[in-house]
Length: 115
Image 1 (spheres, rainbow, N blue to C red):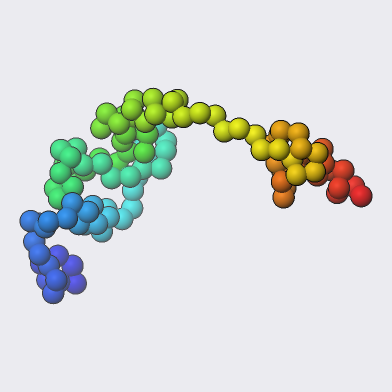
Image 2: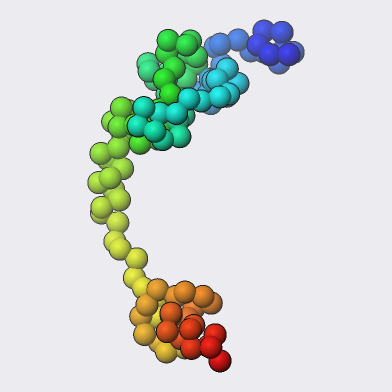
C-alpha cells in the first residue's frame, strides 16, 4: 500500500522535509542519465521537496544539481582553501613519500617483495 491507502499516511503536509525526498524516490525509482552523461539524481525545481509533481522534477547529476542551486562555486572555493595533504614518512627508510603498502614507500616495498 502506498499513499493515502497506507495506514501511516500523514498527507502532503508533513513536518520533515526528508519525507518529500523519500516520496520522490518511490515515485521516480528509475532515473534517466543527466544531459552531461553523469549519473542523475532528482532535483526539485522550486526547492520544495514535498512538491513531487512531474513538472517540478528534473533529473541531473550531482555537479549540474549543485551548479543550478548555486552551491557549486562555494564548494569549489572551500576545496581550494583546504591545505594539500602532507606525505607520510616511510616506516622503513623514513623518507617522506606516499606509502604504498603497510606504510612502506615504493622503493622499500619493492625491495622487501624481491627478498
